[in-house]
Image (cartoon, rainbow, N blue to C red; front, side, top):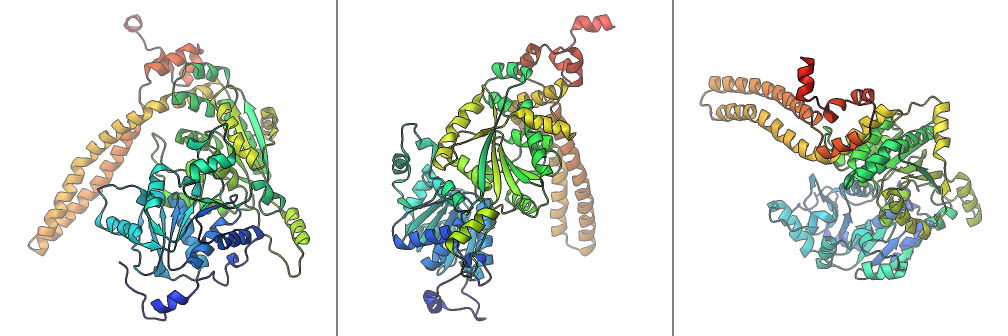
Length: 589
């Protein structure tokens, strides 16, 4: 375990037990908004009951979590859903509170902090302690024992709609604590949802074991008070192109979802819509469910857009992790990007206060009610308007409404596909939060605007459509091809890596300086060659992926499209769809 505080002015245990931690004098968290103060009051008034604080994204729940944590005592654990949330919570604790450095412990991903036995504000993810893998390291087991054996003054659950996930619930029920609070923008779990349930019935069934709702505000309530952005919903419906319609009807399994989400008509309209906002100086976020969609949309939108995801699409070489994602979010907030394309990683715990962030667009998404609320909540934050001296409530509200950010939430839907069913399910959330109304925006309006301003559309023309369709249809099999490519690349690198290890081992065992120097020189030369071999292996991997043959199922779809030969040739499909026969070869000879 970590040692005690250094003697240089840090308080001892007796002093700590009497001390109430607070926000730093310079922190804006010292001036809570009305809704933040209402959350704090509700938490204090219901002490020591467990329960939920339900309030929209952008309403200041993070500050309230920190306030509750500092008021609770010396041992607090904060659970986040993923690493991005952990990073942001840690940053807020270090930047805004009077907690000491070694009172804050992060145990998640690459940050494996050691908690202090007497005082600890531990930030982690649910998944870090929910599983019981036997292969944990000694350090990981030690921290796990600490988490389960400590009597916590407070357990805080960020993104609290996740608490009833089977493994998370089991973990939380095994903890020792005085009080447990959960904070969420929406109290829904898809697996417990029923079309016949009321909200109260759903909450009792899914979350009753945890506690009741201690505080609740809807998006519309906060919007009308000027505390979050004024959000309007817009729906842009497009039809499948004729070729994609044939492919959709013939496709099976995940291919149908990919075809519906990456419909060329949808992508062209998305590009046109983003360009309209770009001309107005707006930044935006595009939400997708699938990694393939993220990759294609990034290509369509071009420079200035970055992908935020928890992994790489099949066939990609670029890595994706929490550190890279954090840098992308920082660049977005600094105004360096036109926008971000986010998978589920960006649904929650992503703080995006950029004022000119004025729209989100959903390209493909499931019917999950909770995730719909997280997506709409990303754009909800409005510039903070503090009360002036002697300013009345009415005057403050008027000024907030005058300076309130206006934002748009777009749903891009491909007609007569699975898109429509998923969008219908999300409507439940919008009705409850006061966003039931939606405005139909004709796709042609956006396309005409793009044409007027000379915006090139990447999916314009039959050849471009076929190149896209080829990528969509092959994606299902690309995972298998990639595994084979990775194995081939690993075999290419292995011999040279063995040579490097052998030289380094011999250098360590060398009995004289001259022999050691010679072996170290050989090791350096081998390392240089190892880098060259690694590059060769990457090229081999790339070629294996790029030259992957199409399955008979995919070929049959392309044959059914009855495309002109010149289109097949330009899309590099002719030889695959109609390979030359032995008779053709003889005729040519």
